[in-house]
Image (cartoon, rainbow, N blue to C red; front, side, top):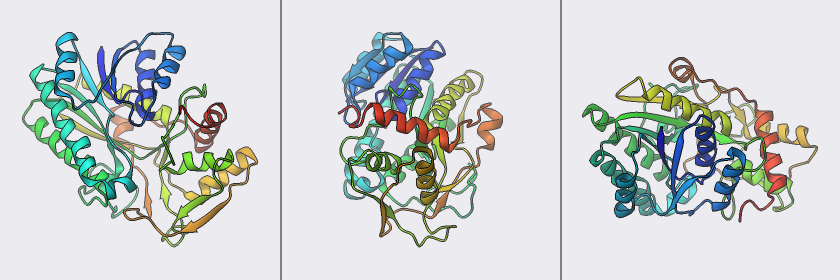
Length: 336
């Protein structure tokens, strides 16, 4: 199949592209490198031993999308492009809605004009807001989001559900929990521009001596050690879930939503301790105030993905941290 991948040079997109190529699919990438690098694509070509068709540009550019769909017989779209920082979304609200929601509408409109029905959407566990119980299943209430980033994902999900009801598209919505790790080769991984917003990249900066200490936002949550608890999933397991979703859409119509997580929750302190044991590197850390929008605990019930997608997260927290550290040693400053 020929797959259009928006944001294919980013952290999640690059790993999914590599998995798609390994399964024999043809890929077209559109990326404006706002939070990614062309170097990732070169490493994908090296690992896959295949050349990549990629287009520099914004996925909300109507003319660019028209050219892509006019010149290619696209079978499905995987949509990763968009802003993704919870904290940044609090101060750049309009940017998040314009880039995440409005541009996605443009993409979907072009798909409909060119009769491309299959769509896999990169959503987030943030759509659940503050969960009433854990683990979280797909039947849990959504919409009580605590930040504009999560709300943008929720709005897109509502649009996709309406499109499915209108029988316009066949859709898989994937709600990620906390992707971490890197490709086992250490050639592609998470490479944020500027100060990292996520826990593991920041921890790696401290371990590499780039930053003095790790700040833990809150130690007074009602959890086993006072720090937040999250479901961390290896990026390669996440990538495999996308390929399974593509297979699923070949025999299933309508809109389907799946959690992609391990079903296990680890606290921030447990993750730090695990890393220290694996590397014999002490991570200096201190506590600071909770961030607006953060919640105490969140982990997945992945039963539906296990049963319907025939997918299971296989890698451990140790695998995630080992692979992330290998990537960091190879590229201390990322791609930039």
